[in-house]
Length: 278
Image: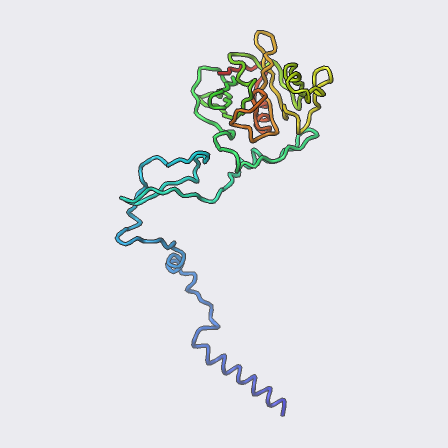
């Protein structure tokens, strides 16, 4: 009796399946691969104000409004409709993979430099090639203390531009000099007048041998020493662990660069390269 019940139930399921075959439930939906249907289902839906055709709207030909403290980037866009008020939009911050690679973690000698959070760095101060017509020969360094940029002159009216930070000493000297020598992971020796002003740095004075190289060393990963007429100007182009000081005027130091940038400059600058500080 139980066997007959099971057989009857199975027969019912088979009949139910056959009766549903007319609804195409067991047949694949091949219409989903139709290109026209795909376009119709995936085409973006725009808000259409009454009487406005979005396809006929054109960008407003006017400067992008700026707000103090917000750098102008590709994420600050302007849009509008004829007769409407111009609006400012902000996209999600997107990290440029090239910039992320340039400022990523670096293992150098016995030290590992941490990655720089480039989403917090003004793109104006990131390393980039720019148009920079100049009468200076390729390989010359130009430091613009006004805009806080360092240019390494290239052929064809180009230059590699780096952002820099300037301390009090960075404004103390200007003119033309020579990169007399370069140093990887230099020792830092504060000048005597700094030792007098800040007794806490006396432990790193010349008499005490200076500060050992390292991630916390104020000269960073590289230093380029500027001489004029064979004499040390005490003016340096150097790295800094304080990446937030780039593009700013700080309390002390000469010309600061992000460590990843000064390492790049170090490899590009030829021996006895000329430098112009203006």
